[in-house]
Structures are given as C-alpha cells and as structure tokens.
Image 1: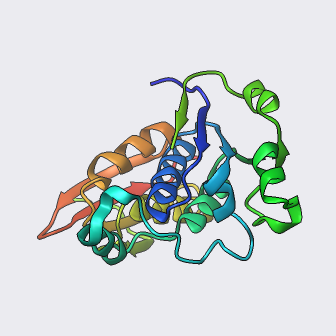
Image 2 (image 1 turned 135 degrees about the vertical axis):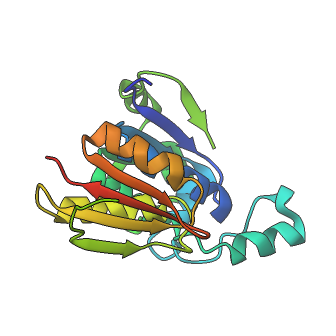
Length: 134
Length: 79
C-alpha cells in the first residue's frame, strides 16, 4: 500500500456517484491518505448550499429497479460522509473555476464542505499519483 | 475468553459500510489510551476494514468473534 494522495475529479452529480466518491474518500482518509477533490459540472451543481440535500437522482444505468435499491439502502448522505472524512483526515475539496463561471456562482453559493475555488493547474499541484474521474 | 473489561459498546448492526468503522473511529478519538471498545457489526466489509484500520492507526484488535448474523470486535486504544 502506498501513502499517495487520492485525487478525485467529480463530474457526475447523481447521488449514487457522489456516494461512491464519498465512501472512497472516507476510506482513504481513515487509512491516512490525503484526499484532493476537484468538483466540475454536475457534481459542483450538487454542492450548491441550497441543493445538497435535494434528490439528485441516480446514474442512468440504474433503471427503475436500481433506483429503488439505492433508495432502500440506508447509506448516510454523501455530504455527511464527506464531513466525517474531513474530521478524521486531510481532505481538500475545490470547485473548478471554469464550472463556477459556467453556472455564474460564487464561493458563498456553495456548501461549506467546499474549501475554495481553483483552476486546473493549481489542482494538479496537489496531484502526485493517478487521477480518478467519477 | 477475554478478561478485558469493555468500557463502551457500539451497536452498529444494520449500518452499511463505512458506518461501523466510522463509529469505531469516533469512539477511539473520544476515548482515552487503554480504553476497551466493543463494536457489533453486520456489515461484511467490517471483517476486513476494522482490522486494516487498527493496523494503520496503531490500535489493538483484542478479539474478533463471529456471532449469529454479526461480528463482535473488541478493540483497545493504544495511543
């Protein structure tokens, strides 16, 4: 096992994908790995302060039966998992400035889980291994 | 058989992964060195996750007991 930073780019804003990313983040933080997250497009949209707890749906491959399965499985909300990850480890969550501009929003419009806004070059300053795109 | 006295018990049965591990981490953080904590988990992932985290975090796995439909972990806060 290495102690490299876990670098995640979150693009999708459906609750299943965000939960998957949050579970990975909690696990990595528990095992002492730094986590570096960049939010783009629909993932960023889901982190808006007034939208975090809304229903963001699930990925299209789920189908009707899959939607029901996800709803029945009592996993904690992804935002809560990310909060826990931040409590136990070093987890940085940044909003992509390009997507911020596209949505016409500012840092204050986002949930406090988001540490700041940055461009891709500064995101890559912290990437020291593979990049996972979700 | 263990003679260690359990100071705190966490019933995390029914909680999906990573709930039981997170509950344990919370209890370890709140506790003092030497505290013995018991965690009950029905999540299969805990069987590997809890020992892995204890190794990484440097705490002691005192006992693992397979009960009917769940696993009982006894853990000691070492540092």
